[in-house]
Length: 308
Ligand code: CUA
Image 1 (tube, rainbow, N blue to C red):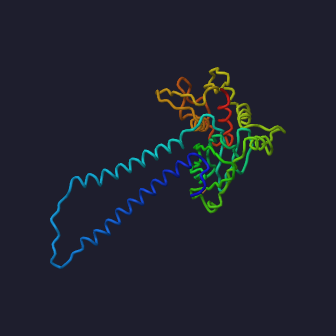
Image 2: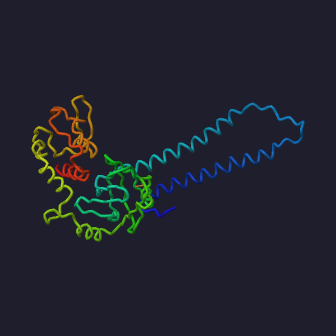
Image 3: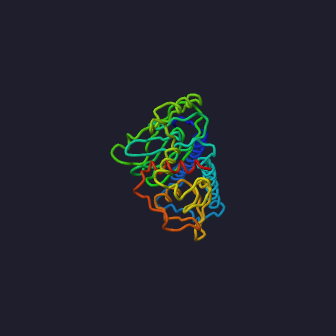
């Protein structure tokens, strides 16, 4: 087994060992029993007759019910571990991960970009994944977590590394010729080391000043005239206000409601007609599909998240 760098990884190890031991015991009982019966009940002569036995209800119940208990224990245990993997801590440090043939790129809130994932030890980290081209899958074996990066939408996963060090990242979905070379590293640093790293260059420069992701989004918000219809002070314009939008529940005209998460915002920017909020005019907002780069959409979403 690779090193276990997180609590979740140790939980996966525990479950895996349990499955291995139960399977081994099951294998010995089943195959051992079969071999023993082959020997014990071998026909002794050409005329020997076997006894007339139909069935034994108690035996049939037990050989079904005991395995059932083991299957259910694996299900419940697996569900508990999976639930830990999929429950995102609120205070997680968010990093955007973009997959492309054939590399991984990381963008931090500060606007800093990196080819390796650099994180502080002991803090929960949430990865927001997307892909520029085809389906990839982001896999950190030491943390026992794996998540598809899908073009045109966001997926997420999280971890809390409890030891400093370097861990290998693989792409684990066949994505073309250099799939096996689509590698990256997770570098887990101490908190002061991380602060020094995130504060240092290279940072995306715009007009000589480093822009955070939210600031890049704000720039787009002003330049691409989103501001004409969407206020950030809670005032309802031609479109809904942006502040407090992220994470809220949005109700449509037909009464259906959606949580305003990253995928909802992405769709509302690119396919603006898909889910119009109750009380707003269909057809007022232009469709922006093909007019924004994926990185622009991510920056805009980051800006919408930042206006409370
Ligand atoms: Cu990317 Cu395989």
